[in-house]
Image (cartoon, rainbow, N blue to C red):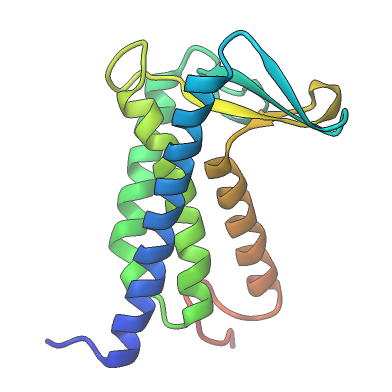
Length: 166
């Protein structure tokens, strides 16, 4: 079975977006670990600062101490995206899927391979918004944007993966 030209384009968008996000995410985390040890850098006054933190939980400190469970969930999510992502029917959904896969894979890499141990690592976070509301990384950002775009498309009647809901 050969993949159509349009199918190859969608696969390229999906995997190319995901790979690019992982590369940018990992590069910025490497930069943060190399440059933010023992310091906080104001970027935009009190609105945005860079401060290195290692997160052993999920968003908003959910799952503290259960890093291996979060790693397992991330492994399932990344695997599912790799299996089902190539079935996406439109370029826009391919982009959305790439955002979600890239974000999930970027944090999975940290959970699987960072200290303190294999498959029980801490995610590198460094982007902090006011009042210590949240500290996150680029993988988190792309994952959230991808999910928001998926919800918007679904609400508009565009089925997940592409196609019109009946």
